[in-house]
Length: 82
Image (cartoon, rainbow, N blue to C red):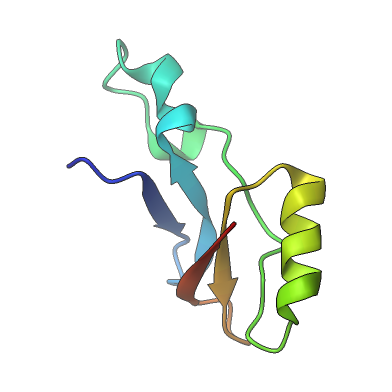
């Protein structure tokens, strides 16, 4: 679809991770690989009450340029980018 990021949900609708083109690159020739078998960035995620400075520091420490923001139920409500 041309999207750079895809939020992956678990069976309960919570945010299970963030899938990027980098994650998909090794599987392009194997189009039948299930998403559950792809290693992707998983929790912990940013929360709405986290300060921007704390979120940015955590993203840099984890080498992330995009990070899901989840509510108290674990549902994605947005994305942070550096």
